[in-house]
Image (tube, rainbow, N blue to C red):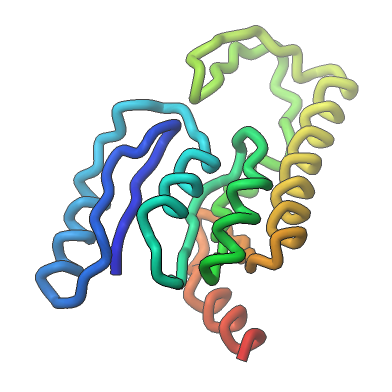
Length: 169
């Protein structure tokens, strides 16, 4: 097992190895990780993966996939490796509640804006943007013949992974 932790840059790379102590190191690194950046770029991680892992590997790419286009790097990685994306989301991301005028902040850029959630057009635009992001993610993985498992942050991913692997058998 190996590990690539990434934001918009590679934060940590641990090459694949065997052994209990190696697995424990990976777990410790994931738990203790303090990213230098708040931005995300899946393409950077996929490019890095393709350049450093030469043998065919089983790859799990875990993200919310709210990021810039990563079709080309995923195509390259999926031709070489068995890639499965695991899209983690929060159900509250699907729609914007009507709570009046609120200040919102982009988690990656830090940009703050005031948003009037009372208008149906604002809420509809938000929902459409969310749906477009989800569809883009699904279409990207489908075009690359890579697997995709979607799971909410507060639910068990184990059943979904078991079902996914049974469907591939």
